[in-house]
Image (cartoon, rainbow, N blue to C red; front, top):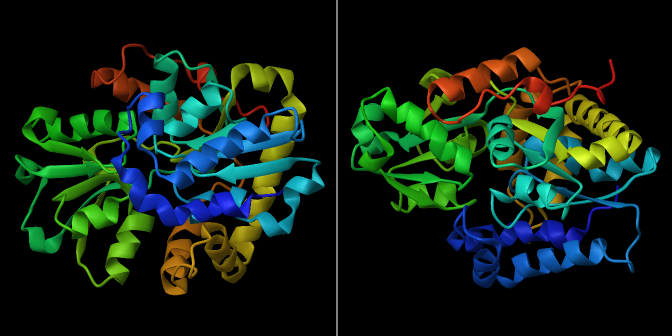
Length: 350
């Protein structure tokens, strides 16, 4: 697997990306991106051009490089090369982009959350999940102890920061409803990857859609006292937090590529779990900032995340249908999508 290090270095520009609204039109988002994000787009176009290798595969991560992407980011082990795949990965300019990049054929694979796949299908995206990377939700509602917020009902009139993926506002709507609130009773602020800074700077009273094992851990290491409530404790069913998605026609036309890709991800995941110390350094190098990110922080995030990684990549059809039934009952989607239209375990080794 060959990962363009200058693209992975874009993590340092993450805070600048917050100004791009998660649901903005592509041209509007491009106009507001910093140079680093424009370079990522230029690279994607080059990699798909006739002058580039025709067998190069492009992957959009589901966020900034992190232990949750360890199965894709542990590049030095060479498992993708072992199965004849030349892969480049990059985080998207906005958190809402992975499914859109895949649906439009800009990227071959993307990492996304299962609720995002459901919403994408409802929007007509020709995508399907082909394997799990993180098998349980890590998303959470987080506020600081000093905020004096005692429960969801206290969020009335408060500002809640979201990464900007459309399904997150739908889940938040259901969470608020249990406390007698609606989205109109709070102020939503889409901040991209800038969740922790938004909370600490007072630009938001709470964050939703970040992860307890990433943002929650970071806040604790910064000496803060975060109050973290996982989505499972907010009435949201279990779901696959990170899955690999591909276009349905790509899957039909190149099944061996998909199978080999998922086999390599499984090997990478196993290696990451078996050698946490090496994984810490691999993730730090993948993030690629100068200087490298704090080892203590990455180590803590790796420790919290490795037990959550899917060892086989198998996705639960029943669990996905439970999620869909819940989303439909809550009025978050208009159709009960069968799991067969959302995922396939065909490419998962037993």
